[in-house]
Image 1 (cartoon, rainbow, N blue to C red):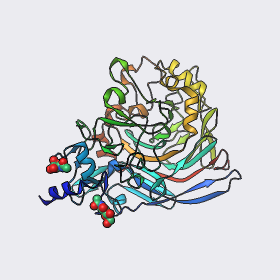
Image 2 (cartoon, helix red, strand yellow):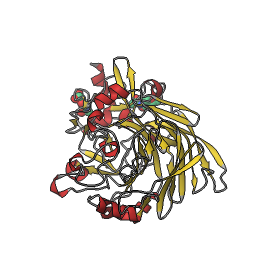
Image 3 (tube, rainbow, N blue to C red):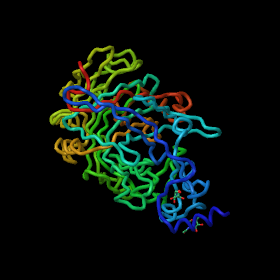
Image 4 (cartoon, rainbow, N blue to C red):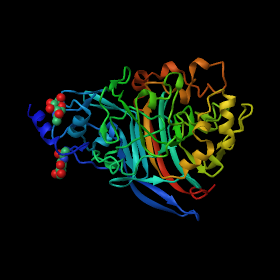
Length: 449
Ligand SMILES: *[C@@H]1O[C@H](CO)[C@@H](O)[C@H](O)[C@H]1NC(C)=O
Ligand SMILES: *[C@@H]1O[C@H](CO)[C@@H](O)[C@H](O)[C@H]1NC(C)=O
């Protein structure tokens, strides 16, 4: 009872708040900044958990504003009210105990499912920080990224992703003053899906007419979506991986409203802001089915290194395993040479060969892609399952109804029906991805091979 009174009183003061129940303690994570002469300097970075995973509760109280996949209207009942009376809680030991996130000097592991008393957590998304309150940014053009990854337990239906997104470095705090939590609390996520699943968009509660997901016990969709360009270096599991570039009409964080504006498929118009699927490289999809997987050329049952080089004309990629360099395969799919990774040419040819709409060209093609590589972006790492597509776009057949009709539908050897998240969480809850030795610097600086 007294909580309700308190909430109204505090509500006069400010906005998307910070909870005061537990202190936010960012786990530390070392990474390396390398120079042209191949000398690398250790940077003592830290990580923060995305705001959507955090406990959102009444300011100065314990009642949840949001639980399961719904906003509790007995706690707050309007966009303004929820913006002012709900606080994002800090995480300390929760990183490990609730969210399944562990760091150890230069390595970080994310586990799919963590059981907590009578509940559980699924997945996580994290950002690398430059300081307590600012995200670390990277400008990819003419640089390269290397990291080691162990995803041997990351099964079908699970996506271990490492990508760069054009979030605001302060989480949008300066632009949207109602956001008091900022980057420290992992706010301001955006990506090329223009996701409407964010509980806060532009510093405001995204709760009006929120529709809880029919399938996902923790998610739903509000009226607003947060769009921005992204470069997905790595969507992956032990069966498949893809690398993809996703430009947007606007180069920075921006808000879309409603299905018509935010969603890729909206009636016959199919209006869109961003290149949702992106120009994407997946060797399996390109016909090189023996390249990546357990016991394959890149053997995913063991740790390996991924090196990605961002030049003006190409996003090249290669692997290192057992101290040997493994280059991308040439593709048996006619008309597609793939050893070069992503190029203007392959981005132009894939939509033709795969009989797809050329969203890449519509948004601005290779020039727009270069623009996104030229601007600072935030590094995000996540592990998730997929209640909408069962991860089929990564590791199975997608779009399923086109199987046998078009080329490019086969993305991996997983069977979609096995990737229902309920089954995935029951069977592979312990799945975890370990990233380590993240290195960044000019092309040629991070590895010696
Ligand atoms: C949390 O505590 C700080 C410092 O005591 C205070 O400034 C802030 O207003 C409190 N926040 C809330 C939401 O109560
Ligand atoms: C916020 O919503 C709660 C719960 O519906 C209500 O009791 C409270 O009066 C509202 N506060 C304001 C400032 O409108």
